[in-house]
Length: 135
Image 1 (cartoon, helix red, strand yellow):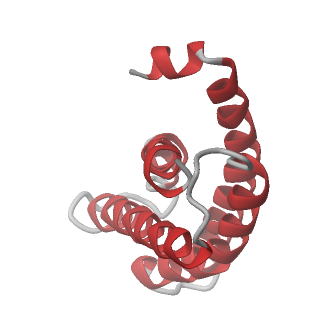
Image 2 (cartoon, rainbow, N blue to C red):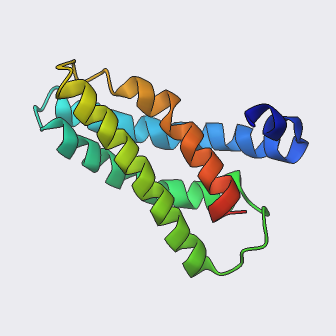
């Protein structure tokens, strides 16, 4: 499925823009999470939520105005914003799962959840944003 999406030049451009914008937003969220959870000792799930809050608004602005600009025919900003918030909540749930699983039951350090936060969650959010939010 990813190979088919990347073969399309328009999708490839969106993917590149999403990687740049989403990468910046993800780095912001991860930086807030790690800083609060590690040096400041904030419980990891609370630190993850703070990272989410720090990143969600900038993510919507960047993705709607740049990553997926001109994609699809959805013109109702309120409906698009609501769909974006659903995808954002899915992102929060995924990242919370990584934090809970890797720092809780598996007893790992606070940096372990950063790996799936950077590798898995962005793929899921790209596909949902492209097909459902901005499609």
